[in-house]
Amino acid sequence: MEIKPEYKKIAVTGVEVSVYAHATEDERRVKEAVMNMIPIEARESSLKMQRMTGHHGDPILLMTMRIKNRKKAKVIFHNLVRLMSAMEHFSPIEDTGDRIDEKGNLYMRFDKQIAYRGRVKLNNVDPIRMKFRFRIPHGLDPARAVEAYIAGVIDEIGKEIDK
Image 1 (cartoon, one colour):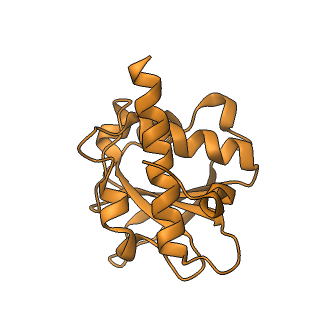
Image 2 (image 1 turned 45 degrees about the horizontal axis):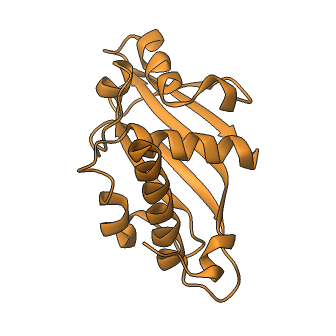
Image 3 (image 1 turned 135 degrees about the vertical axis):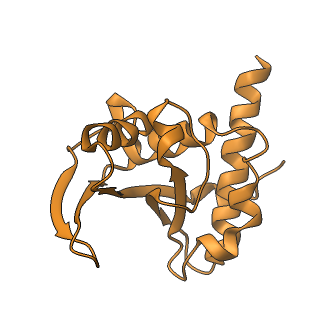
């Protein structure tokens, strides 16, 4: 797929990760699931922990991490796309309207259990949430810009595989 020149200036600029560890879950395993999704070289901080109380009084732990370094954010995004199955590659493109806001932030949710096993699968139920911030040149539609970026990443990964 040929990417138009104006779309080549789009870049991932940051990542926000959040996940809940419920009282019935092993906090260590939830943390490990998150860390499995973030390559060691792309980590710039550890997970922050916030203890909360659920609706029924049960303890809940909110784990969050912010990565503001553009290079690290790009590594994380490319790694996640690389780890997704070929069938899932186009889901973020097809669902862009549901996954992106007016500022061009892309929201993706991943299966905690699968992540614990070192793999990646999109899932909306009790997920690991990731918000990717993008730099989008003025005048471009955020949804189309992010779609083009994702398509470029998929194309790049395909070329790596073909080598």
